Length: 475
Length: 96
Image 1 (cartoon, rainbow over the protein chains, first blue to last red):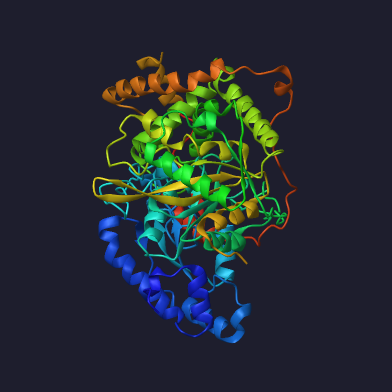
Image 2: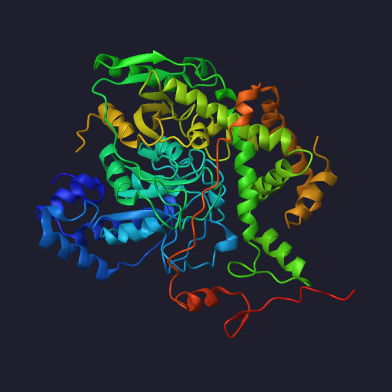
């Protein structure tokens, strides 16, 4: 085999394992070795787990005994974002306040992956509580982009993206509240997928904004993203917002909607050129490109940066130093709360808690929060209407390729990174980012991504359209 | 728009303490963030769009409780301060 084992996709590794060309132990060792060697520089992982020999043996036995009937993910080493609970391991959301918190149970996605025989390499770096687009807000130092270490890997699931892009893991789980899977996937040259809201259980995900959060895969191929999504999706009695998503019919020729009115300014010209090339390639394959109008879209980011901090300030109220996490004693109960939170949270987290408190406070809630919720409803109506005439809607995942560390110091410029991705979280619709070609910046070749959105529950339509672009066969 | 006093009040509501130099920085950043999200003001909302709430809460009946004590040890181990299986906190009511 020409590729090193850690460079395999899930599909390739699953085939090689069943053909007895490689063993689970060899696959684990190759990933664990690469992870150990590269992590000092890349800081993709906050912690690398020791090998679980029992799980490795069990996975090998399942493959040996059942061959093709074993789950596709059996024996596959994955990286898991630091906000997803694995029993007995620390899950800190890259925050000082949870730096000593050991998960007391498995997240539903972890239970499902354990049942499938998956192995866990470690927990990956992220922006604190998933608030950020670069991992620069991690309390433990930023992760780096493997394509150019002077640049950010994107965020908040930047550690997961760096781990997969640098072949330290075959695939990774991230979480996406406003683009936190798709934006780092685009910046690191990966496929990133945010499922339909409710398609994947949030039980055991440390909450940022509960009406927006979804867990999803960062992968080397569309097929891998689909394999990981298939392994974790489904109704869960422990998350009342979960739904069952049945695969829907996939068109032979796609009608691809493009909101040209959103692409007139602020878009890097090389990114634009790759996007136009991708559309031309679709047209050449016999798919139709249709202009669509989404008039409320220019307000989406503003609505998002009201709703998200509002929910974050509410969700993060639970961290008070009382029952778990970092606890700093003061001279009264109130001072215990204040000191624990003040010392435990980083600057961006505090900024968003304050902002959320502001937009929810009496006198401002109508102007900001309620208006944002109305904008959200309008966006959803507009997308539903657009989907009457198209199968998917496409635009670039990010306006420009990965930026350098320290380049975006004022909060608004960082928030603008999410301009294209937030709408799918506000509407709850599924969205996929697929690599669409590299651009040269100061001698570094940097990836860019194309972004597709589909109607509610039509997650599988996105995999089909993504595979058209990558030239993959999906089964 | 956001004054130093306002930021201090918000911090108190959010159980945070902010140093004086931080307050100034937050107030300045707040102005640019609020200027950006304030564009929502210009969004025209039609009356029919105001009627249907886009989101609703989803609740279920309580069911399938786990057996008593299954998680007690693990949870108690996380307590910053404890006495046997009890979480120990400061007095809530003070006599001042």
